[in-house]
Amino acid sequence: MARLYLTIAVVTAMIFVPAIPFLHLDDPSHWGVLGFAATAALLLSPLSDQWSRRGLNAVLTVFLVALPAIYVANCIRWNGDLAGLWLELTGLVIWSGLAVAALKRPFLLPIGIALHAVWDAAHFGHVDYVPDWYIIACIAADLGLAGYLFARFTWTGEGRLYR
Image 1 (cartoon, helix red, strand yellow):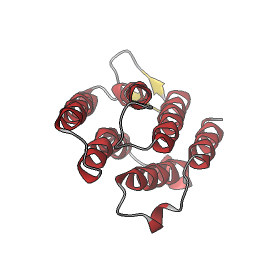
Image 2 (cartoon, rainbow, N blue to C red):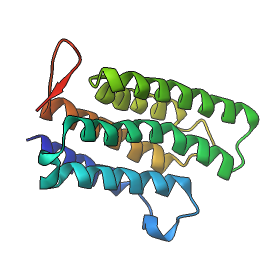
Image 3 (cartoon, rainbow, N blue to C red):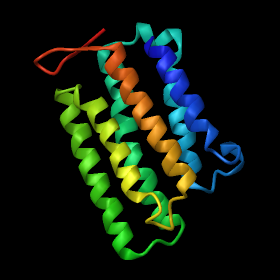
């Protein structure tokens, strides 16, 4: 059931992508699309069942840090103002902190990914340097991946992740 949920999230997110990402590698928004697609493909592959918890956590930790990094890259690439850059750097610090904390408490991974959807929504229609299509796709991707993680794994009181 969890894999079906993630598959639906991938399809939903990709509906909002207006062009083939490989043709727009100069646009950080398309890096985000490719990163989500690669992460989802890894998680949906039968090989993911063979991964250690540490390996899975490493992939998800990198994903968690990459979420705000795409916003920083967009701000720089599309000439956002200094206030926008500070905002995105603040987000990078927040989600990097969550990623570091998740090294000891993996249950923070889906929480951090889900919270990024709130960050996305706060940007919708308010910044010029991140396209609205990306924000919508990112919300779908964040919620889909977080839902997949909550559905697929059991979380213990010590914050450990078990299949």
